[in-house]
Structures are given as structure tokens and as C-alpha cells.
Length: 372
Image 1: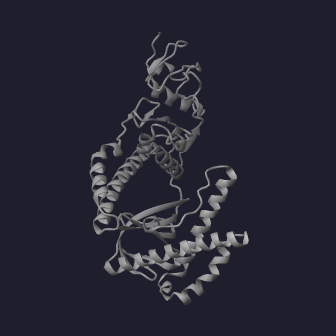
Image 2: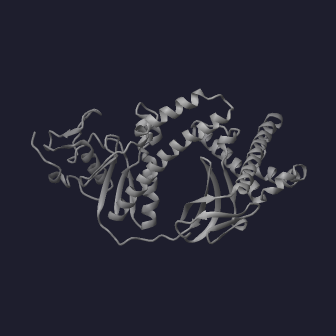
Image 3: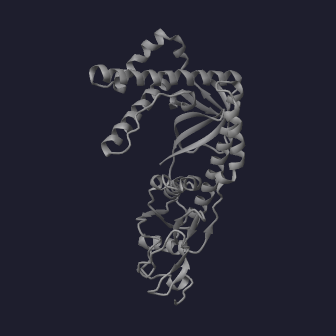
């Protein structure tokens, strides 16, 4: 299976300038290739493919000698990236989704360089990059398996190396323990065994700092050096929030995969939920990222992750009866079997039932029964 490992780079001043120049040239190539495709379709009614644009690279280097400072494979990867954007565009058109035509890239929208295996080599605490040199890297863990593509990313002024590696799964000891997970907003998640995971609300807790930074940015003159510095401050606050959320998701997903052999979750349409009135809270929770981490960690550890139909999980009792509730109703009360329990706990057990890991009516006596 493919896994990506991210490590911090520490280029010196000359290397930072070199990487920045390569970014600008790759962005210029991307925009020029996009412009060529648009103009070709307008004049001839036919688009230009990647195979038609790639042979033009040697001629470009002849006219623009500075492009010789960028490896050919890195330039080809730019054209492949544009081609993938058009493939995704046509796929969305075919499926009737919002198309999202490929757009021209400004400096703040193009921040990565691609290096193929023949253009880099890891040597101790340095990575040797073609056309760049030996760049210091912090390898906080050894790179496992066969290293494939290397992507350099610039995030908030810092450079990171993302190694795509082919690794073998390392199954954990077999476990028959099964768990259902109901994600939410009041609490981040409730497990079917009664454990409640607190919702950290990283973004909401940082809104005071964001408000100050946004107001400072609004007072800066566009195009000024002070505005660029303020933008970096704002970016770093957002990046810190993102890193906090990712760390929380990584730790929680690792604990769940380590403890349970069968994990049941809802197959949620998170994009649709994030378009409603609770959009900020849904984005702050980051359910999609958490479930994605659960999926790849479960596959790597030999665990089973089951995504069930989410329809009616909060409106159904363990006995099978329909129990209608509003969003404000946090208690589950069933007049058929007399079950009274927290709404999210019952939903988690319904999710576990739908995964087919336990029979209907199982655990009814374990969830605070009370005859109404």
C-alpha cells in the first residue's frame, strides 16, 4: 500500500531562492499550458493534450534558458498536474456535478514541486535534490519501504518533503472487539460501548486570535510589505489550528484501531453537511479527515472498517422501532421497549448493528433501560 511521510526541510538562503525561482517557473508553465489549451479550443474546437504539450519543453528551454535550472521531470509533472485537472473537470461534467474549470494559478495557489526517484537521494540528514543541492532534512522517523515520488511543499514560508512510499501492511494481533462510532458536534464522537470523546473545537477557541489578525490585515495597504507579513501571521494561525486538528485525529484513530478489530462508521455526505447552517462547526470537527485516517490505519493494521447507511440512525431504536427526534432532543425514549438513553449512544449502537456484527436487540439491557 502507498503511504506518504512528511518531513521538515531546512534549506539555506541560496537554496530557498532557488526553490522559489523554480516555483515561479513551474507556475508560469502551468498558466501558459492552460492558456494554450483554452486558445486552441476557441480557435479549432479541439483541446491540446498532455502528449501534445510535453514535446514543446525542449523548445521552451531554448527560448527561455532559465528553465534549464528546473529538472525536466519536474516540468513534465506540471503538465501532468494540469492534465489531471482537466480529467477531473470532465469527470464532474459527466456526473452532473459542479464542474470547476481549471483556473490560472497565482503565487499563493502554486506551492509544490515534484521530483521523481531519479532526481533525489536521501543521504543521512540531507536530501540531495537535482538542480538544488544537498538540503538539510529532519528525519524524525526512518523512511520505510521503497521510496517513490517526492513532493516539496511550501507551507507558511516553511518547506516540507513528502515522500510517497510503498509499504507492507503490519497486521496487529487479531481482535474480535467491535465498535460503532457516531460522530457529532456536541461531542466529537460517541462509541457504542459508552465512551464519549470531547470535541476540542480548535477553530472556535482560536477565533479571538484570528479576529485580531484579520483586523490588522484589513488595515494594511494592498501590495505593501506590511500586508505580506500580516498575511503570513494569519496563515500561521490557520496552520496551527490545522495541525492541532490533525494531531487529535491521528491520536484518536490510532487508539481506536489499536483497540478494536471491527470498526463501524456512518457513510456520511460530509460535503453536504458542511453546506448547511452548521458549516463552521462541521468544518471545525473535520469528520472526513478523521474517517480517512481511520480507513488507512485500519487497512495498514489488518482491521475491518465498515461504512453503513446513515439514514435514520438517530431515529431508530435498538428494538427496531421508529423514534422520531428533533436535533434539540438529546435523549432517546422508546415507548415500544422502554429504552431511555443518550441519543448519540443509541445511534452508535445502531451503527454497530447495521454493520452486521451483532444481532438486533443486542445490548438493549446494557444501555440504561427504563420503562416509560
